[in-house]
Image (cartoon, rainbow, N blue to C red):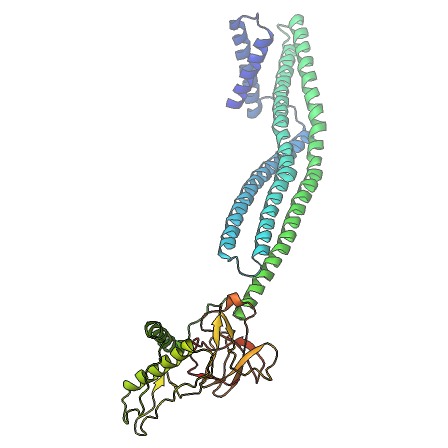
Length: 456
């Protein structure tokens, strides 16, 4: 009722705009009369008091149109929501890949490739979103916009049909009224009936052509629209799968390098910490004493305690270093440590026997971080690239992949670092004679070979 009233209200103003000189009172009277006439005819038709013009073919077209319109409206609604979700997923994917790029450290393998592939994923999302909006949603909106116009035309045809039926009933009433038969009214009613019939038939004929054509167009539209949708989906997912396959390969390479220990943090050897501390103390003593060699007692004490023996050893080491600094050109032999009594156990450092060994006339010195061999050391019959050889005096099991494990008595060939800048203080590069494997040897203090003795 309200919809029909609004339609007549709009029709009234259109009529008034076309006839600006028509008095407002007469226009309102005409509008009210048309509205009452139409609603009365509809009421009588609904009550079955009067017959109505039936068109079963048109009713079938109308049902198809209504179903088609509902499907198009829902498709447009759901697809708009889908594109909004795609854009949200694009933003979420971009944020996730940015977080992954920040987490993936720059020194790790494949860092640049991972950054490039992440950018490719974002570009694929953007291209996918644009394709859905331009090739799918835009044609769908155009397709959906034709239904409101067609619905207005159908409603207008319904009003003209009611008007035609009303004029037909009025004309029939004039013809059947034999007592007050007025030819003038009959002629006027006939003209109005013909006018209403002509208007109705024009609209009805147009709709009989347009509704089936619109209904048949749904197939071609859906084919084109869904092809664009599924092609965009296929392109996006196939290209994205290739990119993610590359990303997976990058991570697999990182896993392989990690298993090899390429990114492991070097662990500090617990057994070498006390020796490093002793070396630092010895260096401190050397820097604070006179270069003159201190006197060595002729006869050591017969029963030294464990607290006196390390002191004696430290004094001997200090004297040896002082001799090296004061007279580097003349070869000297390091003093021999006095034998402790048989009833006292030998001292140990971190569980490793500190047996005295003979040091070379001139120990290895370090210039600019690179170990060098003294002029007095023998370099005869050494393999190419070998600076000198040392003999292990204790057993060591490596704690990292680039360290060297060795047993007591094994011979290690000391060589230069491949990159001298990578050499750390107290570390030497060595090759075991038995394996030929080139790795970092156990930490050795510069100038102190308490547990490795230079042999050549």
